[in-house]
Figure 1 (cartoon, helix red, strand yellow):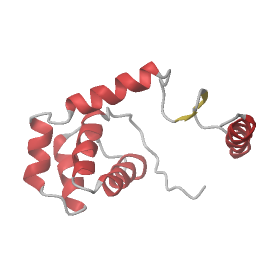
Figure 2 (tube, helix red, strand yellow; figure 1 turned 30 degrees about the horizontal axis):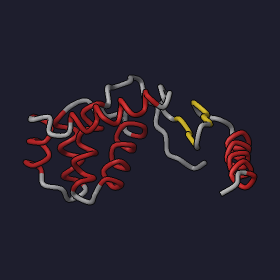
Figure 3 (tube, rainbow, N blue to C red; figure 1 turned 180 degrees about the horizontal axis):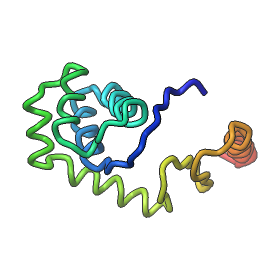
Length: 131
């Protein structure tokens, strides 16, 4: 699919990255921050569980460095991420990625064909439903 991937040797906890992403979203830069985190983790193999790494990523997309550090140190967006996790679990989502449309779910990285069939089946079901 043309996504850049490096040769990552370790898996790092993304919890703080999720919290800072919520902060970046509140500043109108959520997509840019998420892209920077994706590249840092999957391409460059950086530890996105470290405050200094996340603050540098925020700064790299033009967000204020000290505000980012403060949001992480104070855990300002912890409850918002807890709420997202709670909602995900209530919907039966336990892994990333999960594709969720109405009550249908595909977990993991499906083939392009399977994902297309999933989306098409969901669309067909909608077209058959009244209202």
